[in-house]
Image (cartoon, rainbow, N blue to C red; front, side, top):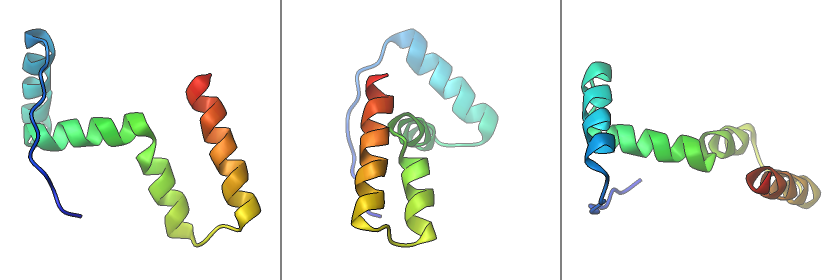
Length: 73
């Protein structure tokens, strides 16, 4: 997937912690931020489900409502 450059404004403490964590994992800071966002947004689970194959309309609606309720939880 194509990547786009963006600007984020973070508190100095958060930025410093992100830099340290990225270095300790051998990642670029952008990779760390992308991984964190993917995890927070639940994209990992969605991609795993999509890899299993297409869902029926009923399964897709059920999953969408489950995720909606979980995010409000």
